[in-house]
Amino acid sequence: MEQMKKQLEKILVIDDEAGMCSLINTVLSDEGYTVTATQKPQEGLALLKKDAFDLVITDLRMPKMDGMEILQAVKSVSPAMPVILITAYSTVDSAVQAMKLGASDYVAKPFKNAELCSAVDNVLEKSRLRAENARLRLELEEKYSFSNIVGNSARMREVFNYISRVAKAEVTAIIQGESGTGKELVARAIHFNGARRSGPFVAIHCGGLSETMLESELFGHVKGAFTDAIKDRKGLLETADGGTVFLDEVGDMPAPLQVKLLRFIQEREIRRLGSDATTSVDVHLIAATNKDLLAEVKAGRFRNDLYYRLAVVPIQMPPLRERMEDVPLLVRHFIQKYTGAAQKDAVTVSAEAMQAIMLYSWPGNVRELENIVQHAVAFLSGGKSITVEMLPQALSGAPARSASCAAADRSFREAKAQVVDSFEKAYIADLLKKTSGNITRASELAGMDRKNLQDLIKKHGLNAGDYSPTT
Image 1 (cartoon, rainbow, N blue to C red):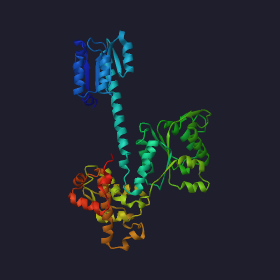
Image 2 (cartoon, one colour):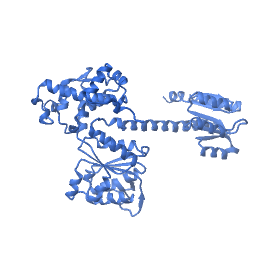
Image 3 (cartoon, rainbow, N blue to C red):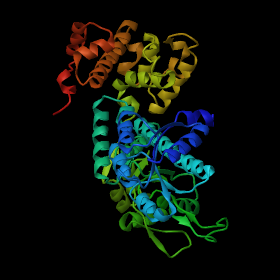
Image 4 (cartoon, rainbow, N blue to C red):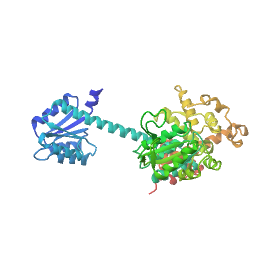
């Protein structure tokens, strides 16, 4: 596996001395790397612009163009490209200076083959780790991008607006809503769409811990602060320095800790449990609760001053039963999540199953819907349609959302028409959003005639122009 990894990595060697150029080529080729070597600096730079390399190795001192010039030229073409300099002992100071300008390492002549290989291995391993970290960060940013918070209802458009504002302004925000509505997903979206995306995102649940343990989790402690404090420990606020702290279920925080949290918000300093020393901490604070905090304030269970410090921007997450027009979009989103992008259009939901889904009251909100779709996908067994038999028993005897939606109040045909109508509107709106209002592209994606699509757009009171990018 290691040998295969090396074969995929390409190294460019630039050294005007034929013997040294050949030696480096041979040593690294024997190690399994793919090596291109040249004695001409200009030719090397031309190769760099034409081909993709993972590392450049160059002599520091050459008559026509020295290594410092090559370093600058390499960085202008590819700023992230690692460069190793080959230098004589007498020019080690110059090599150190070059590292300050962006070189990754240097090897002093005369060197042992093992020294060269070690330097190359170390530099490329760091490069691999940086690339992997960048890939993982990109995955996280995509996972918590706005596109993964699904919804086209008026209530959710309002939420998107708040997320964007909080991410840009970095103001303290509190997200309120029932369990399962997606409060942490919104908090992560704020973080990964803001200036602190490269910093840590640290979440802590404020319920279920004793006052002392919660204080230790938040603020840290010094050795001996309490019975089990056997060594100094950073708190999560300190750990999140430069990033975002998400205080989940802040309404469950004990009153004495509410005072300390208020002091932190005001002073941006923490004091570890058992210590008198203070440490400055820079974090973006986001809180969440499933309680009505204003009611908690009136009841004397939550501090009035802390509430207003947290609720600079209050974000209210609607329960799923109040945004049922988003349900078909969410179902399609979760089908894609659990079947893969290649299968998402192949899997359908029967009219009876969709009717059951649309008539259910969803006490567990989006989390419950995701769980049910995942459950149904697991029972597909080669089939292409989610049927009502694949849904949990709770949905077949689903409590109606309201009397007006109860199946008993209308015929099967009427109930089915309502579900189809709701699905059509949500589907077309999502389609226009994805294609920026391009009807030709939207009709291609939907696999329907352009005129039929236009008729549906008109039927549901939608306007393609509303989805066009603003200039």
